[in-house]
Structure formats: structure tokens, C-alpha cells
Amino acid sequence: MKVNGKVTRREFISTTAAVGACMCGLNGCLLFSLEGDTPQIRPPAYAIEASDKNLEIVIDIGKAPDLLTEGNAVKIIDSRIKEAIIIANTGQNAFTVLSIACPHNGFEVEYKHDQKIFKCISVSRAEFAFDGQVLNGPPRKPLTSYPIRRQDDKLIVSIAV
Image (cartoon, rainbow, N blue to C red):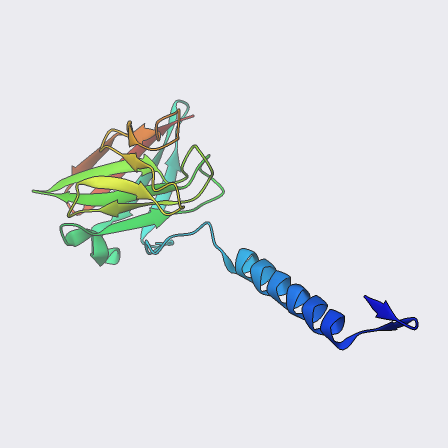
């Protein structure tokens, strides 16, 4: 309230506090990331080979040592593939490859080995099975699942063109 055309002390303090709270809130939004903690691998840890029908991502396990440990996962973000992927060592020499972006909101999913699921990092905490199917949460579509095979010290992911 103004007294004699001047702002009162109370009005100044309450307005300043409100503006400060808004700035803190906006700053929190700006710092919020769509990315999880899964480490990204880059060439030369993998190469992309193209054919008429598909792309093959050939991962050199020796250059991506995180994949050697059961429960670990890595991601590949590359403009040559249509969507980023997550590759998880699910145990007993088995690997799962899924699209990494949650279909509900675009946040990344992370592999949770102790729960045997992939979980969205957003507040929705959507959960996905090894085949990409939704187990829990708001997504109406599954994650895309990609075939993977092991050939000696290489993992080969096939992506249809």
C-alpha cells in the first residue's frame, strides 16, 4: 500500500521476497536436466556401419569397459542414429538395448540392476521392463527395444533404417 504516493516498507519487503522466491524457482527449473547419470561412450568405443536395411552399432567392449561389469550401463547419443540408446549388462553375459528417452516426457531412463528395471529420472518415475514395455507410470508407449548380439569382443546393435 502506498502512503502519500510512496511505497511502504512492508510493501517493499513483501514484493522483494516474492520476486526472490520466483527467481529461485525459475533457477531450479533452468538447472533441471533431462539427462541421467548413465555414462556416454563415444567413438572409437563404437563404430556405425550402414547397409541398405539397417545400421549396425559395433561396440568394442575393450574400449567400453563399463559394459564388462554386470549391472552397468552406457548410452550412445549420435546424430547418425534416430534416437539415443541405453545398453545395459543385465547379467550372465546378457545385454539389453532400449531407446533412452521416456515416451511420456523425453527424460532419460536409467538401468536399475537391483530392481531389474529401467526407470525414468523424472518425477513420474515410470518403469520399463527389459523389452521396453511399461511396467508402471504414465507412459502409453513402450521404449523401443533393439536386438543385440555378441561377437568375440564386440557387441553389435541392429537398428532398422
